Amino acid sequence: MNIKKIQQKRQRRAIRVRAKLVSKSLKPRVSVFRSLNHIYAQIIDDSKQQTLVSSSSVVLKLDKNEKIDKKAIAKAVGIDLAKKAINANIHDVCFDRGSYLYHGRVLSLAQGLREGGLKL
Image 1: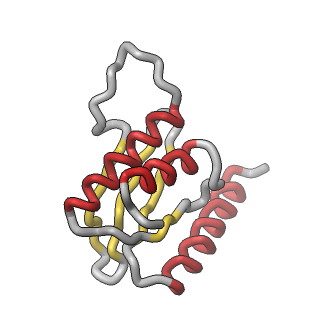
Image 2: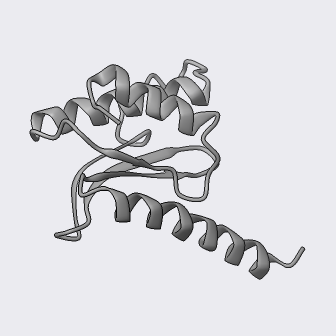
């Protein structure tokens, strides 16, 4: 398949998911970006178009010598983001998975957010 077609499908899927979230909710949304080695998450207020809180696997101080699986790292990012959000007085968010399936690292991130005390 052509690379441009794959990118277009991914963009359409992300727009479709995001449109359903924004139209239903006025809560801040958790946006997820997943690269090959890292995972990034941020809480965005769409009314002000401003990032309120963010966290990533790059920012976390994890032991470089230990082999930790990517799901555990994603869960740690979720817990860290939830702690930062609660300190910023954010308790209720909606989860924007973007163009990614709700499974694997994205699912682990959401579980970490719930464990950290956020309501999705």
